[in-house]
Structure formats: C-alpha cells, structure tokens
Image 1 (cartoon, helix red, strand yellow):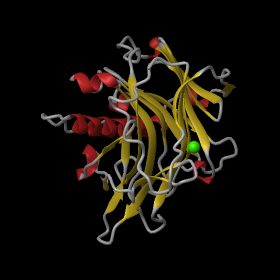
Image 2 (cartoon, rainbow, N blue to C red):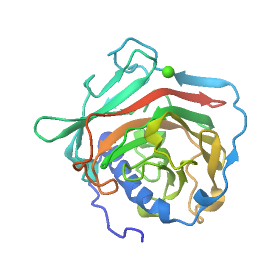
Image 3 (cartoon, protein in one colour):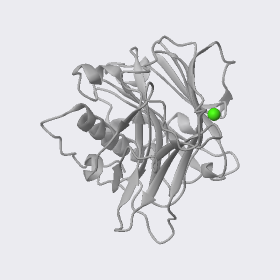
Length: 291
Ligand SMILES: [Ca+2]
C-alpha cells in the first residue's frame, strides 16, 4: 500500500529547507517503490560502453582532509529534515573526510547523549551536469535505521523554482532493513512523494550491498534515463512514463551524497545497529555530459 499521509509543507522555504523537503518526499516515494509493478523486475541488460570523461572527483588527498570545497558544499542542520530523521549534519571532519586511500568517507556517529551526527554533501552551483553517464563507486553503510543516498536535484531549485517542479533523480537509495536492495526514483510535478516513479534492484546473489563497493549509475539523454548497478541496467524511464505530466529532466542537475539516520522509511536504529557507520565513496564520474 502506498502511503496516503500528507506532508506538512513549510511556507518559508530556504534553499536548504527546500532540499530537506525534497529528501523527505523522496523517502515517501521510495517507500512505495518496492511494491510498484514496474521495470525493477525486468531482466537486467548490460549498459553501453562509456564515452569521454567530462568531470570526476577521485577523492585523492591526505587522510583527514576536507572534501574539495570547490566541488562540495556541506549542508548543515537538524530537526528531522521534515521526515523525522535523527541526525544532525555537520561540517566536521568527524563526519566527512578523505581517508588518504582515494576515498571520501561520510560517517554517521552516535554521540554521548544518544543523538547522531552525519554529513550531507552537494555540488549545487558548482558541478551541475546535464545528460551523459553519471556514476559513483560506493560501499554503503549497513544497519537498521541507516539510510545512505546518492542522488540529484534540478539546478533550477537554486533559481526559485520549487520542488518538485525542479525535479529529483535518485540514483541510489538504500534502507538498512533491505541490505540486498537499492532503489532508483524520479520525482517531478505530478509524480512526487508517494507517486514518484521508481524501481528496485536486488543484489544478484542476494548479498548485502554494504559488503563491497558497487557502481551506481544513470545513463541520461533527452527524454530518457536508465539506472544501472555494476553495469546491469534495471530500469529505464522516458517521457512516456510521466502520465502526461511534464518531464523536467532536460536541464542541469547537481549531486548529493548523504547518510541519514532514522526516519519514516528506514525506521530507527535499534539494538542491532552499530555505530559509527561509514559510506565510502571511491569516485563520482561524469561522462559525455554538458557541464
Ligand atoms: Ca578514488
């Protein structure tokens, strides 16, 4: 059953608050995704060969250093991000840092008072690709109540266009209680929140995605987006899938990487959840794209 719960929409929306609302809505939509009879159950096919590298962050740098500020914004805040999440996002190297081995590490921690800290990085206003093959190689965290995501928001959200009109592309989301499954979802006008368009991909061996690195990607062209995991395409969406609503993905989008703790979709940490939890990102790469 899809959630019919209505969200509380704030009347004053800053850029950060808008992003919070977006992630909140993303959660509602993704929660419904596994039940949708859609492309997620279709046989996977191999994606096409990669073209020219347009941009990447390989996360090479000294251990303990910050993610490159020329590329990444660190969004901060608490209060649940409109979705009853528990974490406080910080700018601390305790929550986001390079590991000296070519990886960005986002770490969700439990503090001494039972609260949680984590990090949320965006490339808003800095790296905003349009079209191409976009991918990240990630080892996700694990555990009940843990919710990692690699996703995108339409750059127009920074120009006063409200979500969902500005669009959202969730390249990869996972909730800890489904360790063997990841989700890809689109949100736009008329297909946001619980009506988001998405599918799930199950690990071919049924293993946890947190056991190893995996490449999560989209292939994006005018009017068409395909999602893949480790080169296996599991979902393709086109202008024909929006039910007559506007396809809002023919514009630049920026990346987001974050690890949330708790919330309506993942539920909450319990006695089985271990902290700290780390999302390890080897790279984010963009091929054959307009930047
Ligand atoms: Ca790397």
